[in-house]
Image 1 (cartoon, rainbow, N blue to C red):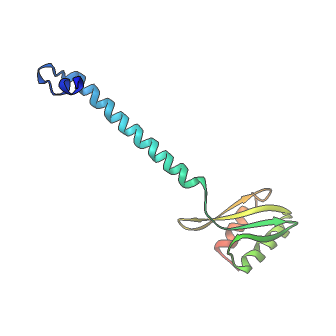
Image 2 (cartoon, rainbow, N blue to C red):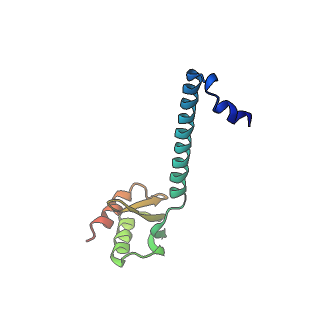
Length: 122
């Protein structure tokens, strides 16, 4: 009750104190907004939805999740044979300009060739 009485007591109003209080409140709201935005971004990227996952074992690509055309798997097999890739994982994520390819394992250097095979099939 004392707080509300002081809040509406116009005789003891100090503009300097009120200004610093407003700046504090604005900073608090901006900080809260940044925290909420950061939590949302982390939450969206926490579990990516992969369009498909190809697992490469002994130089052959096998579809383990999702759907992908047979010719693309053949292209990946050719790329693996060309660059002597024996194992790894290829994941596809939907992007703004199409499908983005993510590679795990020893096929990082061949990621560009696999991305080209996805974007420009033979």
